[in-house]
Image (cartoon, rainbow, N blue to C red; front, top):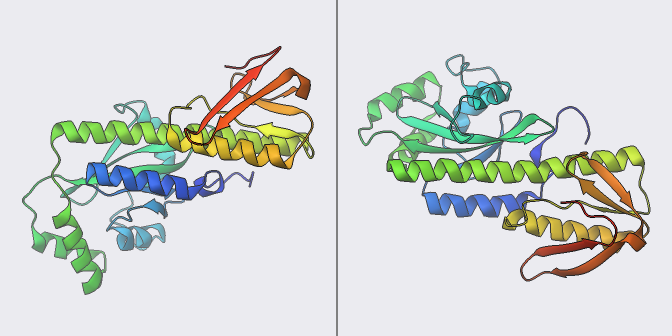
Length: 268
């Protein structure tokens, strides 16, 4: 788990993210999905270029070798010049792909992507030519054409809203996964066996993270007794508190809110 290569599905409950991505897809009316840090699809509405992208990952297509989305090493430098933490790429002449990376331990481990049609004037012959270049069979070629034709042409306002929503979602998942990564690493390093480990996120207003934190607190509290190890964002480590110094308050399952209070110490 703590090897150099970390996958997002090792850190976060993917069913919760899938539900969230489905909601975004429905609101935006465009495909929204997540690629892992090895460039493969993991969650969301699977994009219609997957046969092409799979071949590229296996180094069978030279035409896509400049595709930045498939090389996450280029993402962090690109963020410095991006707007609202959103990266924009062209994928085939008629499609624009935009997205935001999920960062854990200062490294991109996945990326949330969405795609839109840039123009209503789609040349089917041109798509067929690309399909032949990419060595797609007739079934995948027809699926590609149909998918491109079905993509909406978004207004500028809706595009900007989509980019912001994806950036916020990527940041939220990054925070959640980052906390879990350091929590697990701290637990491994400290060899905690019979103690309580609680990871509490700053982003309590985001339903996805709230529910995860609630589940995590309940799971660990029921399974362990003894001292409390609370996440300290400043130190990026677990801080030890004696159980007598910590006051548990109710965990509201209905609203998914984690309330906490410390008698002698408090970590914001």
